[in-house]
Amino acid sequence: AVTVRPEERLASVIADLIGDVRHVAVGNASPIPATAALLARERGQGRPYVSLLGSPKNTFWTDGARELFDCAGQGRIDVFFLSGGQIDGDGNINLVEIGEHGHPKVRFPGSFGSAYLYYVVPKVILFRTEHSRRTLVPRVDFISAAGASEPNVFRTGGPIALVTNRCVFAFANGRFRLDSVHPGHTVEEVVENTGFAFDRPTEVPDTPVPSAETLRLMREVVAPQLAEVYPQFAKQVFGIDTAAVPS
Image (cartoon, rainbow, N blue to C red; front, side, top):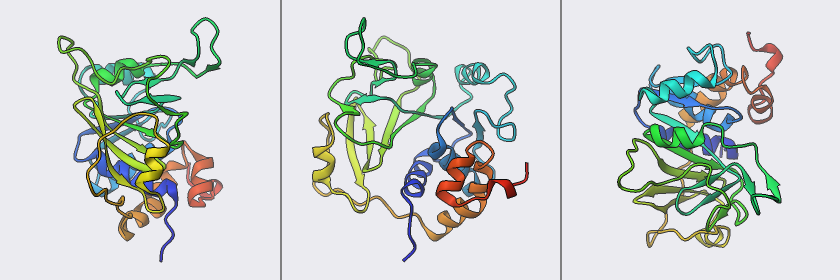
């Protein structure tokens, strides 16, 4: 049997969630979503267009995140990815702090454009590689970006799913639903390690194993492209010799 690395499984799942869209954008420090976006492009033979922040080869921007926000505001980005130090059952994410605002116990990097992008990008895929009650909480300590809005607030975007190292949740009507559990993990384990309540069917399927063609594309075609922005990840996960990758 072919060994599937955890990162490959997550990237395959996320690529399936991207679907048939025009434009996928990936922000900083997101190697797994970047792998998924490039995989989706290879499967679609050039569609969707992929913008990787920090990549001269894979973006038309020359002014970094400022142009990303402008593009999103014009409705020209269909899929984006967000994570957080905390994520709660309402789809809220926390990228600021844990504890009392005046004297926080933990400080995160900051919200950056998350609150804005959450509102204007139609499909936002949440991801978190640590699935625990520390990260998936009943209520975030600070709302950096709100998963839902009041009915009178105009909003074109929001979360559609949460992918973790244990499972896949779908998000609809303000609640998470357990869609699948990765091989080697169980529903009971997911319940034990999730701080918020979620819906689930009577029988929860296993997350599909990436096909041989998906693995080939990731390892032979995507990984060398990924090395431009994420050389350490490409080397660690795919064994890419970054020195041999053309610049």
